Amino acid sequence: MKKIRVAILGQGRSGRDIHGAYLSKDADRFQIVAVVDPLVERRTRAASEYGCSTYADYKELLGRDDIDIVVNASPSKFHVPISLDLLQHGLNVLSEKPLASKVSDVDRLIKASEKSGKLLAIFQQSRFAPYFQKIREVIASGDLGEIVQICVEFNGFSRRYDWQTLTSEMGGNLLNTGPHPLDQALQLFGNDTMPSIYCLMQNSISYGTAEDHVLLILSGDKRPIIRLEISSCCRFPSFTYNVYGTHGGLKGNTQHLEWEYYNAATAKELQLTTTPLVSAEGTPAYCSDSLEWIKAEWDASNDRGLFDGMSHAFYSMLYNTLTEGAALEITPQQVRQQIAVIEECQRQNPHIYGAVA
Image (tube, rainbow, N blue to C red):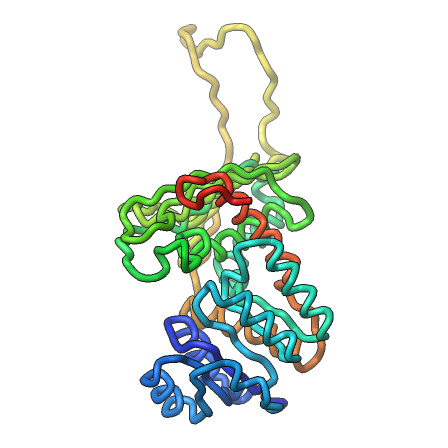
């Protein structure tokens, strides 16, 4: 089995606790050969944990010929310039989210990837979340009928005070948490067309300058309305997904889903009436519709945790791409649509982002 040699830029929460934690366990397919971090204590720890070379500056990697892919888990504002430099120096790149904040930067990265012939992948691992896969399966079955609206809530209550609360650092809920639910939402909306976008943002309880509350509505012709919330101000989150269909609905969270639908083929046929409705006793009555509901539910497996399972699915896909030439399931072109939505959201909220050109 071919082993993919990996360099990781950054040993923060993402570089170490997600990428490093997973790759070091999947030793049959991946080997961490280098780590870059400006903090000496993180380099020392990485050398001990992975048995790899360490550097203070990513440019020290550019002369090596034993690296198959570089994981760019540097702070968000460095994703574009560093990934661009790596691609131009002939290295495959896996960028953490957010890939960028502007479509023009995504286009530069795609162009650099095409010119160098090197891979540009984006770590949107929540595409492989088991609950999301199940939601897509239920919707695709047609049991819920035509999908009218999908409500997505990635909410909680958290008074953040780190660098990811600053617009100058590409922080805020939409660029930080947002790429995960927004990637899912756009898969359900459709990557073949841009939605109409309406977005409200507030900076409420965080200690930085970026938004900590986002309400985003996506709509389009013959597409479901999608209402997406990403809030740090929600003390009582109720669900992750709530799907409205013409034959039923689905609701649930990352661990449990339940859905109900009726069989349209056997349901009583109704007819429109404009005369007053009356009960059997002759008194005024309201519309009644007796339906037989079919109920189903799903629970997440305990075989892998949510985050480890998503990482395993993503890296399995990436391994097949690097070793067999399989197509990426999450492409830069798909992520470009996501960044276009984010850029428009920022334009609509000048009280936080100023005048965005």
